[in-house]
Length: 193
Image 1 (cartoon, rainbow, N blue to C red):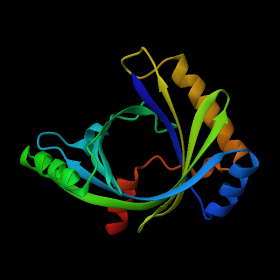
Image 2 (image 1 turned 135 degrees about the horizontal axis):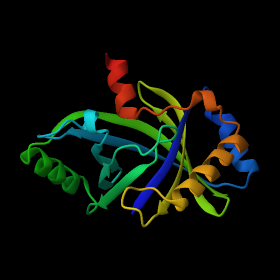
Image 3 (image 1 turned 60 degrees about the vertical axis):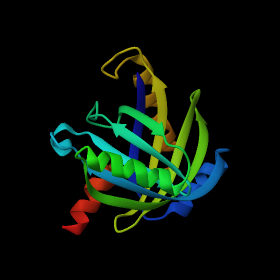
């Protein structure tokens, strides 16, 4: 089972985190613009089931992503499945049309500027995303992806990844009081009122 162990922090300034990443030997700093169109399921309420389904567009690349319910109360650990689409705006538009014809309705699009860094953390490849989310604010997302045999997305692999993620957050000076468990979609919908 493919499990994404993630924690998100609201920050006032991305520059300080960027500097700490560089001091820790992180690689990357690649910047992209992402547009995530989230869909409403035709037969069940994703807000009630704590799931999400989106079409992400990054330049000519696009993919569908399904995110299952959060698995714990402290992090945003969840099962995640991603399907890459053939490149090109026409393919992304066709994919959007297909899911709409199946009854999915767009909720809104979350637009962000993402700067991605990679850092070795306790034997894991940790991804640090420095996000400037339009109409929502500045955030740092830390993520470790693990495979587990447990169909529910639990297990010692997940626990170890959570511990590594927590230690990395401390090294990066991220405040545990600034942890944000709501998705960017939830935050944007709340901001729109």
